[in-house]
Amino acid sequence: QAPTTAMRLVMENSPLLRFISLTVPLATFLQAMAVPSLQEQAGALLAWKDTLESHPAQLQSWGMGNNSKRPCSWYGIECSKHQASHQEVITKISLRGLRLRGELDALNFTALATLTSIQLSHNRLTGRIPPGIVSLRDLRFLLLQRNQIRGPLSPALASLKKLRCLMLQQNELSGEIPRQIGELENLVTLKLSINNLSGPIPSELGYLKKLVRLDFVHNNLIGSIPRDVGNLTKLT
Image 1 (cartoon, rainbow, N blue to C red):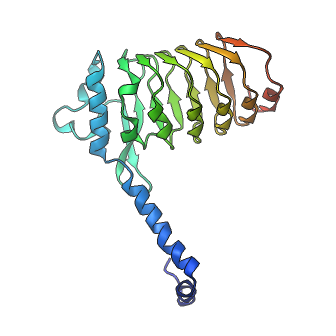
Image 2 (cartoon, rainbow, N blue to C red; image 1 turned 180 degrees about the vertical axis):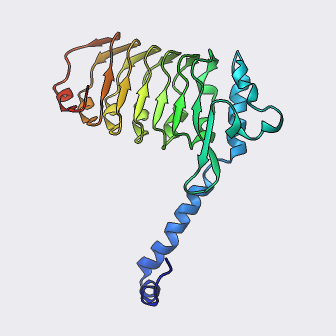
């Protein structure tokens, strides 16, 4: 809605309002400029495909013929329009149970910053959880269960504030469960079972007030169940 004459006069005579009127569109513009192009995202996926030891038939659609630069039509890839840039971007990767062999860390997540869902469970992916995943600020679902991912859980995962489902069971994760996991306040599902996790259960779990499903079975955890778990009134 266009501003009235009175509103325009106020804005013209208020340095603060003039500053806000300029910086808000600028912030939106900068956010849009920071969004990777669809071609850049397609390139990241194709580069990762080249590192995989096996290429199942489902991935034949990646980079073939007229689809070479149209990743939104590739198997397991979904797109939608980005709110700030209004351009089409990749939002979901779903490649469950394809027996993919390779390093998850070889995937350039910086180019896939618009992802909201990663479903790569029931494969044979190795290596660590890539540090680049923490740059996915809109990520809601991270499903990596039943792979061969190893190493510790990084405290930096706490930066994924929109995460609702974290499923890392049946891998080879080690080390302690970071207390920063209590900062994932939107978590509904947390499954870390059948790994090599050790140490105590962090009391910070009590901050996850939306948590419905929690599974730590078959690890090397020690100590008692923290009293703060009693704060999880939605836990079933």
